[in-house]
Length: 265
Length: 95
Figure 1 (spheres, chains in turn yellow, brown):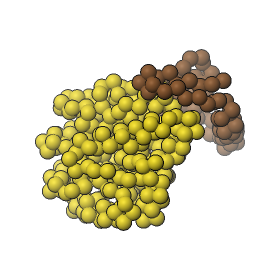
Figure 2 (tube, rainbow over the protein chains, first blue to last red):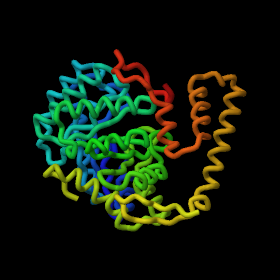
Figure 3 (cartoon, helix red, strand yellow):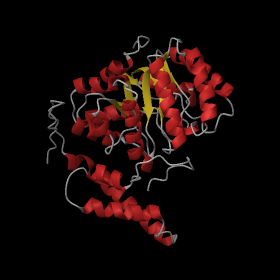
């Protein structure tokens, strides 16, 4: 079955992974700007990264019949330095017209600090100035509940239209508040943190399939780029109808991402 | 026992015998957790705040009522509401 992985960090993956994704039915990926595992020393390092996201990765993906899209930002993990963040934000408009850029992301919070919140607010404003979609990272573990509330308030305060933003990494304690406020929600399938395929399908059974997407967030850490097809298998195991699988794994991400005129899959 | 998806939003009733399907793997996870707590005791780390938080979550697991996963995640969450002055270190999994 064809599917879309709306959040996967392919710069951290091998070309073999593209082949495996293609064999499992992946037709398009969207790659948010991420933290590289160490702090980039200057804004110029981000320029290189944005070139990788907008030139190299789409070319690599195309060989396997996968459309590659991306999101640009300074990731919240490196947002504790507002000076550097503002230098990076100043670069971003140069790249927003690239054919595979869908919007601003993944912005959000990491440890819920005051500086992170300032940078989040400025990146929301950047997205609104350029009429861009927004992809949001919510914090890890004990910081997620508080951080999700702070993020939703920041988005609402600036008048973001909820249908234009996807709040990612939701779990059982945050999914309802995201959906109730009209935003899209993403569940990330990770081996140890975030959601397992079983829990993600539980959440779909409890909250329905409207405005919910699943992703692998495959990156340089413990993660599985094939987590999305494994969740498809979990839904099949529970005998969910194929129409529901198509909605969750293809139609929903397609509907959100297609708000950008650049997205085709 | 059949599980019935009663969500009006999804409009579909799916049938699977949940206990038949999932019991063994979760029995295994429970024993893994027990063995981990034994290992923590042998290491003399039972007072670690993360282990204390885990013990609190285990108490909650025994309480009746739905949404156990949500309630445990809330128990393991930072209960404050204001941004912190500075981002330090990484999240650890318990407040």
